[in-house]
Length: 390
Image: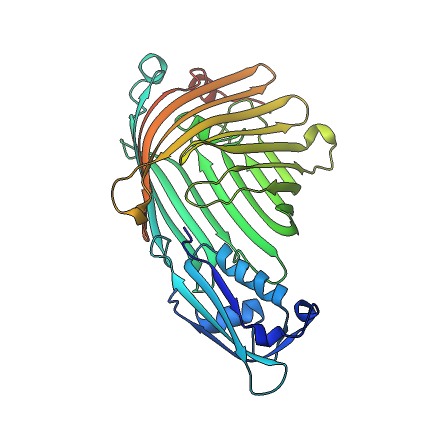
């Protein structure tokens, strides 16, 4: 978390009256010091703070906010001093890396012990209650703020139950345009609540920042249910492929834990065969402070293909920081309740889970240890052994 914020502008630079804020300065020299996370040349180029550039106080404030928005720095300070010539200035940017935030790479993972209410009756010994998820994360790929992550999810028998790979452009740029791509899959039986209508999902999209937390997105989505395989929701449509457009809004500050606020969004996956073949997605979340640093978050997601199929996931999560371990690790306990349903013609599925866990992170590690109690759809395995028509 950011612990200090300072921007000092010498009065003599913009002296002169009420027009001071409107004056522009010509940068004579720019120095960036204090950070091992990003090279100074990259910052100067991304922020357009190079010798000879013309800047105003408002633009400097915006550039400072971009640096703070990366979440990489404990302190950001701008110092302006007079240049050798009239109207010119020297800019010094002093950064202090946050030791509690990921460096170039960080390991993430979770260890879970699950009591499955369905396994003893219908699923036999195929599902082991122990699960292990390993994840590799980078927020500074290529030493230029590109983002990437990869994860695999195994159960205690060594069977892979899910995976994901993702890549994204830097989170700040002069044009406020981002690109993200992600591919993921999850076992519809063992990880039912981790999917939404389709066992495999891939998408690549551009995001345009409209200001005030509003974002427009467009790209391509490919959602699939593979015939007769574990990574599919039986009875749900086989594929949903097409251009995807959406609008999202969020006023929460997302870090290791979200701040108070809300988010919501809607998108549509277009299809030339008509409205009944299109995909419609809705999502929303709200985070509130209960007392002290205790936070509660309610979240819902919905997906429909046409007007017959519906997939829904909803969760309620409570988090409480703990005064243990090192302060930089930010440990905390959480309790989460999740419910999900899928409906398509005669097919009906429902799953529930209650989870109690401990989370903490440091500069190179994110860990989650949890105990979960869940009930999975009991009829899904029988349907998977057959062929179904979409």
